[in-house]
Image 1 (spheres, rainbow, N blue to C red):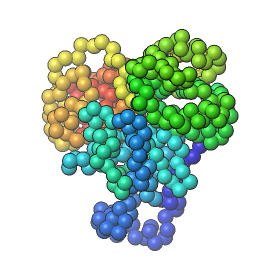
Image 2: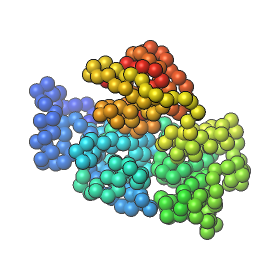
Image 3: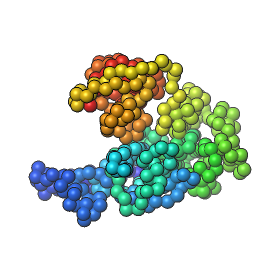
Length: 369
């Protein structure tokens, strides 16, 4: 398992420790970045050093983080930030490979309709541009002891990126155990890494890949058609009950995988990059939300994520993955009841941390914002 150990993780030099009380990091950064775009006192930044097409509507970026980045493991996400039209936008993206020996990392980004960050990275972003970068987070990783475990990887659309990191990690160790990858996309042109995956399957007898199309008709021996179902899983993985399964994709895809496999395989780990279908609830009308630190009181709609509602009201809470993983948007709730939009569960404890991106207001709330 490869991770980056940056220079900043080593003990600070005596000179740096002595200078810290007298240095204003923003001032240092302002002048240092006139000499080099990623030189900072302590702020993690990454420079785009590669920008290449990956598939229809997708691009692979190679990033070179500076010495302050604390690293990430294959399959984890990182938050990336950029100024777009004068507004700071932060979104999370998965590493699609282990970090290289010189610390470079790659991410593959698919453009999303209306997605400000993804569209920015697809086109206006260029080699040489600098992005804010956060530490790795997420549990879609492989421990050293797990590389010899038979696995089934289920990728829906952009869910291929963290799973590709795992495939590349396992390939680097010779594919020590059977691995099957089933990869869904609407059209053939939308498959990322197709040539590399086919090459890996040709080189490693323990690796099997199947490209599953929901729009185009299958036209090759390693292609199939249709949505995820029990028949396809049974036909491609006869020893399904012995496999450790990782599934990543849209919420509906992940929910379908859970319904088919939960309790029927050796282990099941899932990660959804969009919310699953919501349980039917009657969350209509508005509630009063008081922001304790600013003193502002807002009327916000029930039934939508608090993060979206606050942004629509002109607030700018910190955010990252927008899917309940990175905890960037978590804030204190001192009063009121909220609903988890993934499960429909209502949470009314008077004092708790609330993830704004996956919770909606049920009653009047007081938030630590």
